[in-house]
Picture 1 (tube, rainbow, N blue to C red):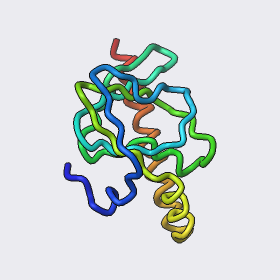
Picture 2: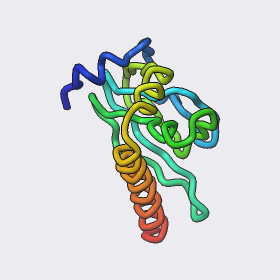
Picture 3: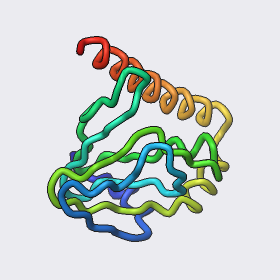
Length: 134
């Protein structure tokens, strides 16, 4: 997926990670939203029935950490993100994103919130199915 130039405009910094590096640890606090500039990352999540590894793969253009929009200042990470090979990430300017987010209509905020929550719910369902299949 190509990186949208409007999204790229929010990149404040870049970070590089080597293979198998944990970029985000589930349960940790974080105040950043990221975009994958190069490489791939796997998503790992703990469940009551065990850990699900590689729920899905994040690739170029994918964004993660977006739940921060729903709970600014809390930023508890809901999954671990691990580099699969060398990875280059863009760290998005969270302050600017939050300022822009506050300027949009309540209806659009509601739509964005619904999409973020649906992604979280879908991830939970995938994890539940994966652990039941064991």
